[in-house]
Length: 203
Image (cartoon, rainbow, N blue to C red; front, side, top):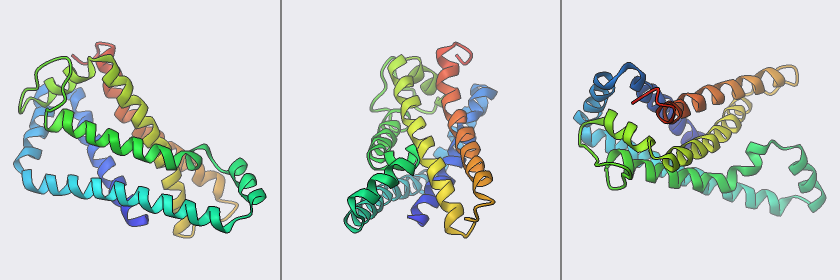
């Protein structure tokens, strides 16, 4: 889980950094899109690795949950459910939703097979993104899915701190805040795009 989580985290950081170039105008974002297109085969390898990582991550999470459920008494499990974070309690059902979102996202903005609202224009990333998010339900779906992703990030970043030994009670509140801030910044970076399109700030 640690390896697949790290792969997804690195991709998420790189992807949001590239997407935020939409605020610098069509030329900047389209240049970024042309660069990605120029490394075509490598990029598709990255996408396949990403989807495989998500599937493996979900599988490992479900297997871990089943093992924990089988190993714990009922009363202990209930107590743990009360004390655990909302993010950790929703990991098992929200993960598949995020996977569906990734596939939908690729079909819409990469392949152009799903593009409600307007025609998909090959190479015009700016047009495709703006036109896509002008459809309100696409933006709502995107915001919802990315918010779920944010919950995963918060839980995953905190778990990463624990796995490398930063689990001292004195440091726990600070590290939990750090995980929350990092996840929140990434989430806000992603959802700022559809929100800006819906508000007419990006058009």
